[in-house]
Amino acid sequence: MNNDNAYFDKAEIDQIIGYYIKKRDECKLNKDGFGYIQAYKSALLFYTLYRTGRRISEILGKSPYEYGNAKYPGLRLGDINADLMKIKYGILKKSPIKREYRNKMGKHKIRNDEEITLLHADKEPKYVSIGADKQLITKLLAFVDENNRVFDLLYNHTKKKPKRISEIDEGRRLFNFSRVQAHKILKEACDRLNIIRPTKTLTYSYKLPGSTIMREKTVKRGGVHCHMCRHSFAIYVLKNKSQDPSALPRLQQLMQHSDLSITQSYLKFNQEENAKFLDEVWNDGN
Image (cartoon, rainbow, N blue to C red):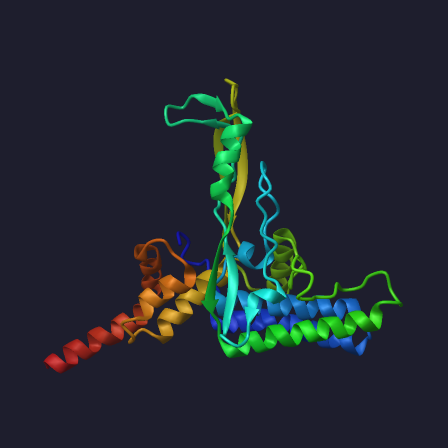
């Protein structure tokens, strides 16, 4: 976590969720079934991200990589095990397989179909079942029932109808948003609630493969984004379980970090507990 502002505190999360719950209730009063489900789904998405610490792609899924057929559809009804209190997620690797690339020496290379097929085998998502709290599972299952109830009511009355969620159709996602849509939904709430994070503009130079012409690209970094919910989860857990020696390794397991040092980076947000600890040390010494 490079940006110290890239997280929401609990009050801000409650405001974002509350914004869409209020919108849901307004749609219900106006008998807007489609808007009702969309607002309900939006509130539950950010509730799920905050309560689980999952990456947005692990909840919403990811479209196929550039080459090959690897695909993760996202969180589905069949992934929720209410009896064992677990949810199954697909942990995705970040970088796609590219046909054109540069090797370690900087030479331009092109992969053939056989190489792509072999590399593609390692790109399948790794599925893991992670414990979840009872309240979250109850809310997810309640949403499924409500979504299907509204679907049945709207089926013959409107073209804009929410899709039915069923265990039979494994490809039917609980949250049928794209990641771009999720970002826009979050930004709408933050703009209305005046939740602001600083942004900065970066410009960097690059060359296209096989070209000698230098190009420039300008990108914006910072602002609000869905990954902030993952940071918020980690910070909240460590702040509330600071006295538990098993909190750090447990958090590493929950977030599926490959190295404990990645999880330890969140400890810098626990300075209040450090100050309290030092007060106790020096007071006991006197």
